[in-house]
Length: 204
Image 1 (cartoon, rainbow, N blue to C red):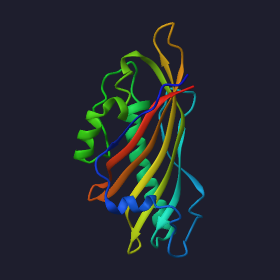
Image 2: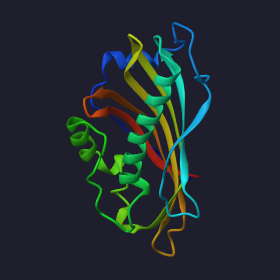
Image 3: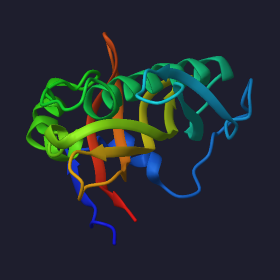
Image 4: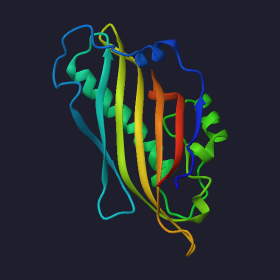
């Protein structure tokens, strides 16, 4: 039996980002470059498995006109933010571990909220009992809001799954899933997460 998912919607979502969730939205002009619905692989990360697992990211809804080259650039940049968070919070590091205080790519406000929600936003709740973590899935779908042909905000809908080996004979390997949405805005230092709506739980 699977454990019920825990969830939390952290930080307020800007009105512009909320608009991305509206059903049936699409780009208001022809797109250049790759089909926005085509899955494109992004960065890789180190894992405790036989080979690195690549995050697969795709462009979903695009509101506003946006050249294909800029779509690709945003996909790469936002996927890098997701990868750095996932590696720091869930799948990276040497287990057992207790150092879960880093949220790279988050704004100061979102970092404070994620630290408060650290059992959800990282493996802080189980880190001391974990022997190893092996990523099984790293996927994201990015909804973009463009103004004047530039992306102003992104909603990243993601699904991260991992196999977790727990210490103790009565605690075999289990599959853990973290999924939901993070909301990003562009700042001088690059894309930053300012809010989130995330669930975490064991899979059957």
